[in-house]
Every structure is written in C-alpha cells, then in structure tokens.
Length: 515
Image (cartoon, rainbow, N blue to C red; front, side, top):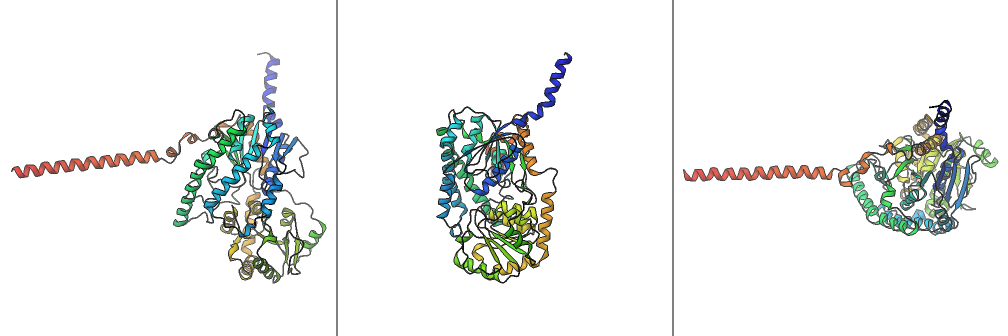
C-alpha cells in the first residue's frame, strides 16, 4: 500500500466517528398533549444542537428552536384545536378511570392518532418525497402503526418512552416484564405487591396484552397497509427496534431490568433556572415562611375542580402561614385567601428552583415529579389518571411525598397532609437525597441520549444490542413448551408405573389363587 493510500485510509478512519454529526433524523410526535411535546421537543432540539439535520412532525411550534444544526418542523395543524375542544368538554376530575376500560379507550385514541397522522397531507407529501433518514424517533404511546415509517424512510427505529420500562413495549425488545414485580402503569398499586395485588396485576396484564395482540395491533397494521406505499408488515417493523430512550432514572423509579438497547435519560429536559418575572420573583423572595406551589399540570385544569373540593383546598390553604402560588386557569378564584397568588401559566422549573419553595402539590405527572426531584422539593400527590398513581407511589416509597387520593380530599385530610410534610423534616431531607442521586451521573442525560442515537447510526442499527430471545415465540419465552414436556413425562412415567404395578398385582393374585 502506497504512503498516500495509507494516509487516505487513516484519514477516513479518523473521521468516521464524526460522520454521524450530519445525520438526518426524523422525529414523529403527533400527540397533542403539551407535556408529551416538552419531552419530544427537548430531545430533538438536543440532537439538532449536536449538529444533526433534524425534522420534527408535531402539532407544536417550538418556542425556542436550536441555534445549531438544521431544524425543520412539519406542523400538524388542527390537531391542537381538536385536542383542546375535546378536553374543554371533559372534566377529568369526574371521570372513572377503570383500568380495563382504559384499554378500550386507548384503542380508539390510538387508531385515531395514527390514521389522522398518516392521512395528513404534509405527512403524505413527506412519505411520497423519497427522502431518507438515518434514524427515526417515535414515542411509545398508543401509536404502534407509526413504527412502520422507519422501514419506509430507511432509518433505524428508536423508541422514546415517556416513562420507565413497562408492559406497553417490554415485549418488543425482550425486556423482562413479569406481573410478579412490575405493576401495570394504570393500576393504583405499589411495586411491592400483596398476593391479591399480584393477582389483580396479572389479570389486568393478561387482558391488556390480549387486547393489544388480538385487537389493537391488527387494526394498526391495517392502517399501515392503507396509507404506506410498499408497506412492511407491522409485526416485523415493531420488533426491529435499535434503541429505547427511557424517561426514567433510579432516583424516580425502583430499579428494574433493562436489556442493553434500553438507556435511561430521565431528567434530560430540565434546564438551568432562568430569571423569574418581577412579580413572581418578589412574591417568592418575600415569602419568609416559605411557599407552597400548587399545579395540576397542563391537561388537568384546577378551574374544573368540583366546588366542594375547591372550597376545601381554600380553607386548608387559608389556615397556613406559608404563601401559596396556584396555577389557576381563570381570572377569578372565588373565596381566595390573601396568602394565595394565582397564575394561568407559571414557569414551573424556575419556581421549583427557588429556595423558598417548601412544598409542591401536584397531580403526580412524571414531568412534574422529575422536576421536583431535580430541585429537591417534597410533594403531596393528588393522582387522577394514567401513570400519576404509579409516580405518586414511587414518591411515597422513596420518602419524599405523600399521597392524597382525590376522592378522600377534604379540608381536614389536606390540612393534616400539609402539617405532616411541612413540619416533618424527613420529607425534605429525602427529597434532597433523591436530588443528589439524580445529579450524580457520569454525563448529562441529554448528552447520553445524543451519544446513543449517534452510536446506533454509527453501528448500522446496533444489532449486537438485541437480546437473542427476541427470536423465541411467546410460549417458548415463558417455557410453556418445556413445562408441558416435563408434565407429559411425569404423567407418562406415573401412568406406566401404575399400569405395571397393577399388572404385577394381578399376576401375584392369579398365582395365589392357583396355589
């Protein structure tokens, strides 16, 4: 090999790791929930800031687009308006979130999301454009049909999970998901389950997975065949996952198994605190007795609280010496005590970072839980639906929070919870300890996410991270064929032994009679 050729080969090897710096990455985030896009937008912005060519499909316009890389947004116009109209007509506080009915609702919602997204004009234009991408990122949330776009665009499929490993996608990457130790997301049970809780968890999991395999996946596959040219079978597309980015961390969840292609990046969306508006800064600075921050998130509206619950909250707050900052979506709060300040929108991360904030009363959404742990603020959780109950249990078990069921909330129960958590220093100490655990990492979680996306691209899908038992059928995975064989052998041996013994007994009896 000539010197010039050796130099050229060496230069190529030197530059090879940086080729992914210009990777083309497509992110699909069609859900119209603001909390979902906060996470998706932060992830895609981080990839763009790392120098990649990023395309994002969502109902939201990013308020602070990246200053580096390439950034293109395909806005799903009308999705937000329909979402807001639907939620304005529903009072989430009055709904009964039965875990079995949730599967049926999820079917309807998931099919609607996928069909409207695939049928959207701008999405169809992109599908027909012959563009190719190196990686395709899609959230794991009732939208499995969208996974087939990775095959269409030629990109490696990367899942983004808004929470920890769970039965919604564990089976897609071969991650252990036994109902004995992993509660279903929609159930109101702790990770350490009693016998009857494990029984309930098993039955719900069986129903959920039966619904998924027999009803939801076939319908999603039909949508893929309908809207994609040269479509891949969804069963093949779903199991061809290169990476799962998990919005979780051991500071937030009990430790769980995770196969090599699963990477925790919980807390990646939290940014350094920014300067507060003057009125909020003054309110927090002058709260010498501390501040209680109260927000039910972006989907739940405090203004929709039943009157008796609202009045109970006001009476409990009115008796406290602390000031209260309340995310209230209306202009007026009837019966508002003098120690309460309202805000239709509040910069939550920046508020939680203020040293005078002593308590966060929350619905238990994972974004809120992550942000409060990041800043070391204890919580009272009033979970309503979804993963909120699971997050609330995690906070209680970790010792930095209390759970106040919505149906049990009265002036007395809220006052008791306020007194316990504000006057017992163990909750704040535990919150600070959890915060230290969250901050104690080798690299920042967003940098870790960028690294693993680039790693998958560098290694052409990183098939070496796939566990081999993905090739097993479900009955092989659960050893049903092995147990069936063992039982068959035992039965055969017992049957033959019994027949032999009976035969010998008859022979002995026959000889005795002859004698």
